[in-house]
Image 1 (tube, rainbow, N blue to C red):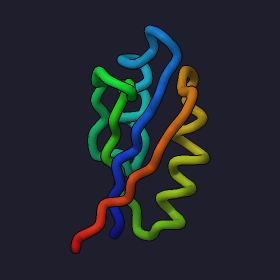
Image 2 (image 1 turned 45 degrees about the vertical axis):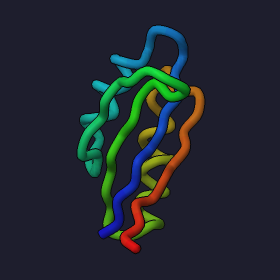
Image 3 (image 1 turned 60 degrees about the horizontal axis):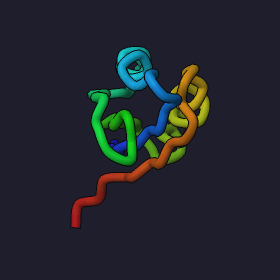
Image 4 (image 1 turned 45 degrees about the horizontal axis):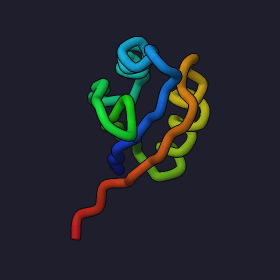
Length: 77
C-alpha cells in the first residue's frame, strides 16, 4: 500500500467544489480546501505506485476546475 499527498491548484472560486468531488473518488482518504499556493490538498492511497499514478491522472486530474496537480508520495525513512 502506498500513500501520497496530492497538491491541487484550481480555477478561482472552485476549491470547495473540487475538494467535494475529489473526496468521493475511490482511494481518496481526505480532501481539504486550503489557503496558500495550493487550493486543495488530498491524501490518497493505492495498492501500488502505478495504481496511484493512474488514479491521479485518470480520475483526479479529470475533475472540472483543476488546473495543476503535484503528487508527493509518503515515505517512511
